[in-house]
Image (cartoon, rainbow, N blue to C red):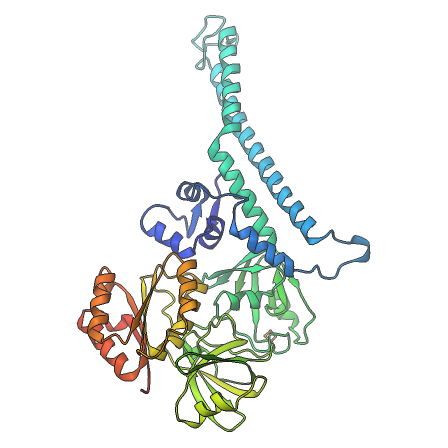
Length: 506
Ligand code: FES
């Protein structure tokens, strides 16, 4: 069986990140064929890929827990989800085993046919007539010994095909792939080539946003038409009726609303994506404070929630302006991932200004807040694959956190390193978040620092990293500290184009 898999699908099957597969390809351990990898290569590099021992299945178990069957017909009641999932797994395995067996037997038939042809031509064994010349005399009759040899060969080949461990591994991998294809479908975007998976019963738009893609959308509920995309290949299913009316011509061309459809099969979808901050419109959203979380060292984490039908489209690392009901406002970095535009996180430092005092003293959960934005161009270079070094100086951790979470969700960066320096009296408030990332990701390193001087930081970078100019740097924090680090990096030979920075007053 010669099967090719997209990088995203291969990563999913092997239980590793897409960046890890890309790294193996760059190091020559795997080959790509038009952007895809062969199953044989995947099994060679990850021989322990198994159908049963996979995190994917646990994940899928979660998905199916949320995936209530829709439009269930009285007369065709579905079995319970657990029963259904068990049957699908069994069917996927059985199907792939049958296909593998048919292919193996076809191969054996071809080989047998070739042997018989050779015998008929007198080149595959001794003739019982003694005539080897292939003249116009009677056809050569194989000797009994030749026929016995052929029978023994056939038996050996059949046993070998049945027991071939590579075939068995391939079968297992394909069974897993078949199962995952039932539970989730992949969507490839045109022209960008970005790929993401639609899990369970989520809409194409929800899956794209969760995966860090920036498709156009507005209401997320079928009213505005801004999520329109053209279906190039594949089959979709409408999740809900929508008020927005597509013209007949649009329908004929394959246009659909991504917020109102899910993927039935793997899809190719043509749609515009935002690639830079300039591609995103300024939005004003009436949101509310969901939660206030006081931290040590005079920091308040402010959780803001937008309406479900009006979420904020932004790029990781950008800012938004918060206007409180008290008439106070401030522009703050968004400390959460754009993959969840509904639940936004901001960090407010306690100080003497009116906005800070209001947040620490009078603001309450469920209070309305007007959100305007996004602003700023401190964003991730998404196509860059070189190791990314994030340097957070004090409260610069907020936009850095957003960048890192987005980088994790799009899974394209080979390695991350976070250096986070705080003042002596301030704790590393996000330490649990950093530790969780370090434990989850093989390619993430975290170095907590206390009031690190610029020279010390540079010395640390030089000892940790192979060569400073080979990395990409994201530096955020108080203006004077950021300026010092950036000029030290430039002096160390890092090209300006590889440094992005965000400065706050302070
Ligand atoms: S986002 Fe408004 S119709 Fe889909």
